[in-house]
Length: 332
Image (cartoon, rainbow, N blue to C red; front, top):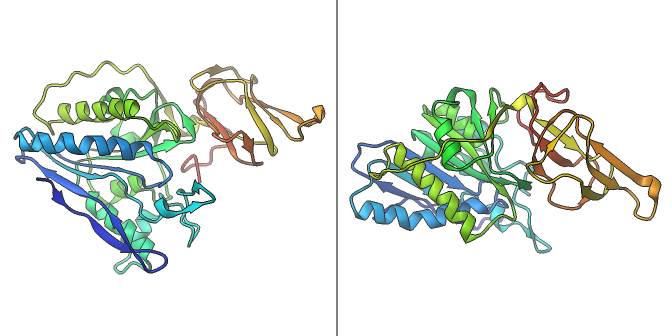
């Protein structure tokens, strides 16, 4: 049976919060894998994927076909999953501190005695994964194509098979972070053969069909990495790879009703209109046109259609360094 590694952390009100975690141990001939979802608690798709994978891994272990060790944390963030306000889950930022749940892991790990319950949670999560050979952190965007973030040291040798197995349409390669995201902390404090952030489309893309597709992809990836004694065939990857600095992030020039002229995956030309914002419905002069800064492909879109000024409207691939890129991550 899987080893139960679940633990508890004090909540912001002093109540105990539960984090479910399980480890499946094989015969020791394969690598150690860490799979987690829900660090941003409002990103649900990965939770369902890992929920589907758990019984498959248990059956594999029972049948003696598990070669490696697999740690699974299906819902990693006990703080954010409880932050329902007026019917909406606000799971990206910790309400008590304002901190992004997927930032500052390095700082928390460096503390001998974490200063608060939030830092203790971060430290425990990294320590659970830092000795793993292969680490996947499952996320989603607002509305998005399936895509990956991968450090340059892992691309293409280790990352190409993952991109193919998950049918990722875009791979974003990064060199520097500095914000202490989970993936970055694992790279700094462990020796992984691969650590990657997997973006499973958009926040509304939660279904059994999509979860099975993604679970099948992860399963195939585990097989070809020698974690499971099973032959898997992965199709040749047909996606696009882009440097982080060449990604274009388009911001809302004003608040208003957001109307997209382009769909996810569409190509745009430099200067082409991809969306409009109607600042004051009824006033024809309040309409603002958003133009593509360079040629590329739309990877993400803002989910809400009433947008605040300065919000991220869309992200595009590009072929040259973005004028707005100053290093680090794409999103706060």
